[in-house]
Amino acid sequence: MSIEVESLSKHYGSQIAVNAISFKAVPGRIMGFLGPNGAGKSTTMKMLTGYLQPSSGKVHVGGFNVLTQGMEVKRIMGYLPENTPLYTDMYVKEFLSFAGQTYQLSNLNRIVAEVIERVGLGPEQHKKIGQLSKGYRQRVGLAQAIVHDPRVLILDEPTSGLDPNQLADIRKLIKELGKDKTVVFSTHIMQEAEAVCDDVVIINKGNIVANSSLADLKKDQDSTLLEDIFRKLTT
Ligand code: ADP
Image 1: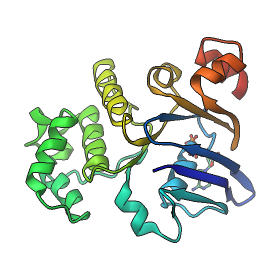
Image 2: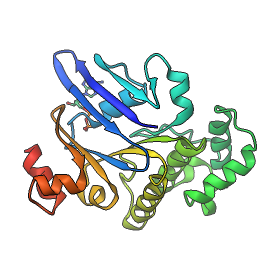
Image 3: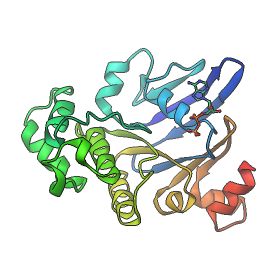
Image 4: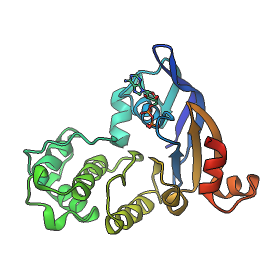
């Protein structure tokens, strides 16, 4: 199931945060959605998931229109927002069961146990979310995004605030998830994009300045370092 973005814009008053951007993300490939701070990444992510109404343009996910077929889209999509709104008073298991219930999953106990295993939350699963470190909270956020085994995953800065060991674990998990799902994830860390992405979209001041496979981008820009390309295109 693909994500198709067509001439998508968002205006905040007179500011154009996202300016008529178009791109396509496809199954089995991981797309890095890259840009400096303030470029429009989060605004775009929120429009992809239907949490924010665009000023104009369209988003289709698996053929469904995000604005008019929101329920269908939610069933096939997982979303990790930038600041994951987690219920800090809930226990990890309780929260994930609650998240699973909203998708009316059967075999909820088994599914929750599997997802806890998959994101490496085992040792912390009996704690309250408020008692977890940033890295483990991020894993809870990721677990709620994948609990219903969505075909499409949108991850907004999934590795922000993680230490190097946690970073490696989460990157590995994203890679694994990307084998059969359509994954779009945002980051401003170029080494991370380099390690994880098949395709990249670079956004700067609301405009797309690159949109291709990572390999083609390097060829076109005659550079082997994504960091150099990023700087050239965004400064
Ligand atoms: P990024 O995620 O790439 O850091 P954002 O999408 O958060 O960028 O922001 C893009 C631009 O839109 C920024 O200039 C930001 O200040 C502005 N912006 C974001 N949200 C709002 C809002 N709710 N009201 C006004 N301006 C906003």
